[in-house]
Image (cartoon, rainbow, N blue to C red; front, side, top):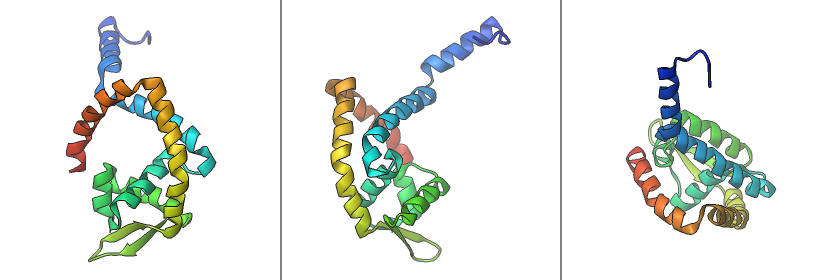
Length: 152
């Protein structure tokens, strides 16, 4: 522990680190992301890119802002990620109404999703084996509840 902190400050830091929702959810997300990234390595995509493609395949074309909201991502962060996918020919950006941009998955992106799914299933199976299906079934509704207001 950092010697520059008082005993009271150290207790506060320990409490925040041990029980902070943001810290612990992000740490868990990084661990799961690492596991899925390893499984998806043969596809040449990271899990953060794969989820975008999968959601576009699922949802169909939509305005960029609406898609950012659905993904619970900042519009500028999503735009940067989309730029990489667009460069690989996996998504298409078209003008929408007014200043809106429509984002959709390309035919090549659909083919990539087909290639991703088997690796995704392997990663999910490995995750469930390590975490436990009952544990995941118990956690998933809570995660969905946490993300729902942000995605609205």
